[in-house]
Structures are given as structure tokens and as C-alpha cells.
Length: 209
Image (cartoon, rainbow, N blue to C red; front, side, top):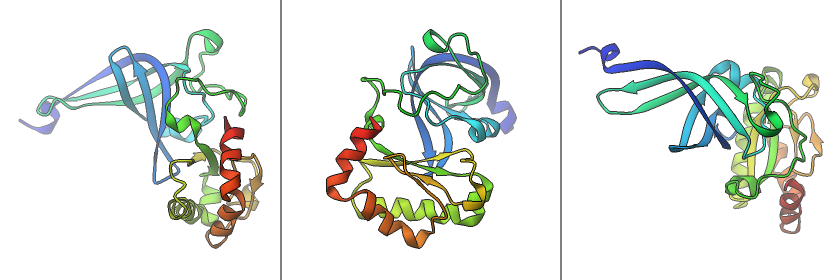
């Protein structure tokens, strides 16, 4: 039996509460974690959605996801890939946009959201201009600096769309909302020490929440 006959492909439509983003390599958006009636599930985002998704979406927001479902008949593994994501119910009910609208960056997180919601967040532009100017190396340096300082459980890195300052890239936004431009990987350790001295980490987390 060929591989194509061992994989059943169909469309799916599910609804659930947004829990968190799935990030690869510290900054690349890959998919969403949703809480559905059947339990927690992972949905991979199609490339066009990853490029445009608003990473400030509050945990707890109701989403309707439509896409492609692949069921491996041999192993029983099911993979979901979203082609369209729409907000639904309550405050988002009238929107019905393909990409969720941009809520205020300071919208309070849901009290029952997961542990990542309590982390301070460093936003990193991952558009091509910033990446060409050393953005990838900066992301790697940030991840290493957080690990070296044992801040992995307190600070997270998330990629964003364009920050409208391309010529001054790479661009970052620190947890206290200060923007850093023209950041080089060699400058990251000093930047971390400045923003995450022991007496400032709790302040950053409090501000983030």
C-alpha cells in the first residue's frame, strides 16, 4: 500500500479557546495550542497565517479554525493544519476576520491561562529586512543569554511582524515596552544585564501582566 493510500486527508472545522503559541527556535511561529471539547490540541498554521498572525492575541480568546486534517491510517496519528483562523463569540463575534484583530498590548491575561502567560516577553521582528541585518543571530543570542542567566522560566521570546522601522533593524521590544533598534548579537549580554538585573525581573513580569 502506498503512502497516499495510508493517509486520509479531509477538511476540519473546530472551535476552542486559545491557550498559547507554539514557537520554534525561540522566535519562529509554528502553530497554536487550543483547548477544545475533546481536550488540548495542536494546530499547525499555514505559512500565510504565520506571517500575518497577531502575537498579542490574549489567551482565552475563542477561535474557530478551518483547515486540512491528515490521518495516518497505519499509526493513527492525526495532524491538523489551519488555513483560516477566525475569532468568535463575545467581544470578537462581529469581527470574523481571517487573522484575529489586534487587541491592546496591555489587555489583561485570563486568570486561568497557562504558565507562559505570566512570563515577561521580548518581541523580536522576524521580517526579512531585520533578519538580513542579523536578526537570526540576535534571536539565538537572546535565547543563549536567557539560558545563561536561568531566566528561561521567567522570560520568553516571541517573533512579530514588521515593526515599521526596517532600516534600523534588527528591532526588539523589551518587556517594559522600550524599543531597541540596530541590535547586534554582541550587544545582547549587556542588554540582558540592563533589563533583567535581579531586582528588575519581577518588575518586568508585573508590567507584562
